[in-house]
Image 1 (cartoon, rainbow, N blue to C red):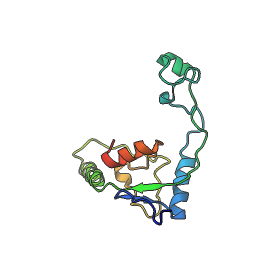
Image 2 (image 1 turned 90 degrees about the vertical axis):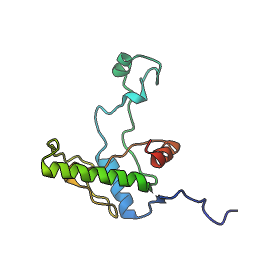
Image 3 (image 1 turned 60 degrees about the vertical axis):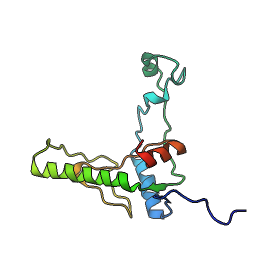
Image 4 (image 1 turned 120 degrees about the vertical axis):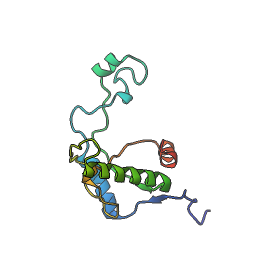
Length: 147
């Protein structure tokens, strides 16, 4: 038997804080589209993926789940990628405040609420949370190399 959990990649950590998990579940529950909820990448309800043309896909939309339950959450903080993001966010904020960049139309999407123990969102750059479901291997690739 193993006495220790397998070694984790740097930057990955299991989220165990109940408040954080509740906030993430809230994002999943409150931002889920209740009607006309489908995506083209799911393909056609009759023929599946990649077996018919776009007209058939639009006519026979394959629905997505009606809700989501958070089973577990892992936090990834790839330091070089986070630095690029933070630098870009700062440049956008500077442009919008100085008037040198394009005008910014303010949005308040449902996913723009805070998560305990995370950096606050910056409404001055229209920052909000985005969750995207994916397989474990794809997530590791995204976190490791930004896709």
